[in-house]
Image (tube, rainbow, N blue to C red):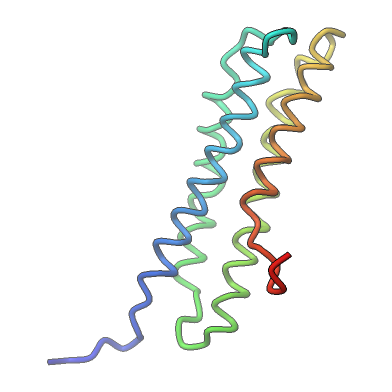
Length: 137
């Protein structure tokens, strides 16, 4: 049986895809809060989450393909660094996309509070996607 020219590391591939999906869901949830509001917080009434998710896919598709194509499967330390780089770029894309989707509606003073609540949800969920520190805290 022939051995592939590189070691197969399907865990990295699946983890990377799951990571991308996690960031997409985080963005969608925050934009949904901005769109629909909460009990005592007015929503924008526009489905900004739909456009936000489309933009996220458009902007991160090449990023994901590049990360998987250029991953250093033979070096576990470099592979971990590759995943950290991917995570940082996905986070940056989420924040940038959120700002772009909400900015046009901030002329309404009532939506400033909605944006603050949605942004807080975004950052809370982004924090949950970060890996736990090596020390366990």
